[in-house]
Length: 327
Image 1 (cartoon, one colour):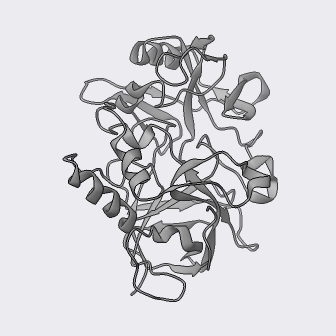
Image 2: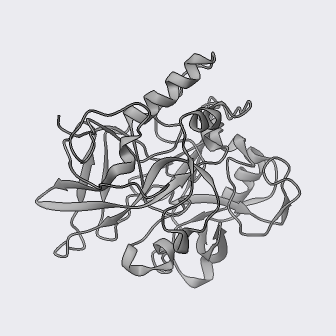
């Protein structure tokens, strides 16, 4: 069976509403394709009330669905001329935020988990819009190409926007189906492929020996590389780290509602509890794993204006691993 891209997901803003229907994503010479290229950060220190209650998020720290499920109602759109248009779902009116020049005077300190760097502040009008939408002082920032963020602070692994840590997250229709079977068994409605906020959902995966999938196997765990080609060029998505899951998969991506933890309970019932195999790099903390983080390796002869397109429904070449990267 051929492996195909069953679904593509793309979110211009971190923790904000993804695009509804994505037919293709286009990767440029810097490995970036616009995903999570904007994010809201704290304008002043904020004491958490939902996630890690009582912990203080410092000025410049990113806003997350874990603490601010209202972010699901903010729907940004990247514009062809540059900049972003901000809308609230089901609400009339929008604010166009033109691109701000990527110079030191416009960049401010920002952080995403343990990463500390710079983002391009998008001005007071965007900040006021965000404060009204989210309910507290915030600033909107864009990724800086002059002060790029490197995956794991390692330039050899390529650039990443404001995603949690990696530019591409890979799942499968098989694993979404297994989670939905568990949810259905206890009376919960099914979730969409957007819920785990993956970039790519693959269809047609097997195991390294091409055997039929046994019960409860998430086949993306065995995908070492995905080769995506267009315009005579091939990009390689290479597996790096399994995704440890927090409350986000239990947050409705349309409404922001979070009622209990049925998705994480389903993952536990599917024996998705474990630790990273590379404990020296990622620690020994137990986690619930679902989907895989990948980095993008570009062809050496890719020029500054070249593009590589990943398209929904396209066949892709997959290189399997004999082992998973968590145990």
